[in-house]
Image (tube, rainbow, N blue to C red; front, top):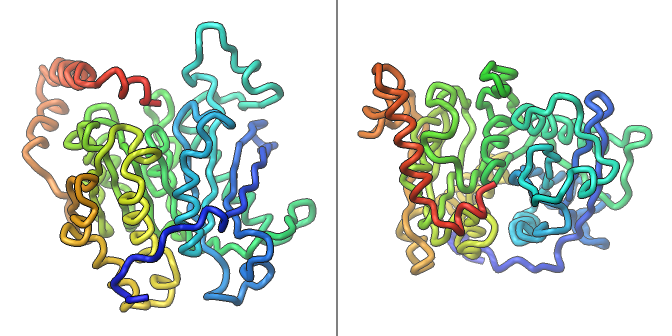
Length: 366
């Protein structure tokens, strides 16, 4: 295959899914995981030295209310794309007592026997879920007593990426270095993990409802891919792209709404995500294979992505820099922070953009 060409389409038969519910005894909280593994008979199984060695991992944190067995297969195309590129995707579903439910639904009826711990603080709980899963994977990978799994590949847990959709974007950023704040606004943790090489976020929060710009600036040297839907007010969802600046960042707008990470512009998003992973997580990055890395990066360009036609709307990127990339909206943001009438402006801004949301978007926001 030409080094500058995109890899062939993913084969759905190339992935074997394992679903397990793990209990964190320290928190008395269950975590729902789905692991995409190579199929039985794959040379990757039991041969860690083959094809570059152990397989890197992308940890995917699901949106709020992502019920197991409902639309769990929405992210399978992403898992298949990543597997074809040699990456194991682990999807984490977070149990949240505050998730949206019907008028006659109860958590204990939907999730019988599931423990949620005592904290009941979604941001902190979701962050700790991810740390627990990474620790559990390390124990499985090391073959510790009671944790061994048959027919698993060797995992390279020194090459990790984290991704998330909707509410999962904040959890992904928390794992990548964004300060974790509890429900009272206090900093619970400021996580730094050199194993995290990259993050991918689909459909980040609106500008005025997400973390502060000061917190976003604290995300470390982790390359990022930011994706938004063209019908989801993308111009007000790019704050992390503008303020995370210690590593290269990429911004893609694709045809679709808030579910663009799950159901929108599939081919385009899978291609861009896969090329981003190839550049920053795969053997190309590990072995400083500049030719293959540059080939992947060359496909991350407006000129290359225009081949996707109407599905492609906008793409831009920026290198690592000392300072964040500000624009004219930061004047309004400064007013929110410092002027006496800033709170009034903030409330008016939030109300305005909530009014812009379509009924379909409101139903999909988790």
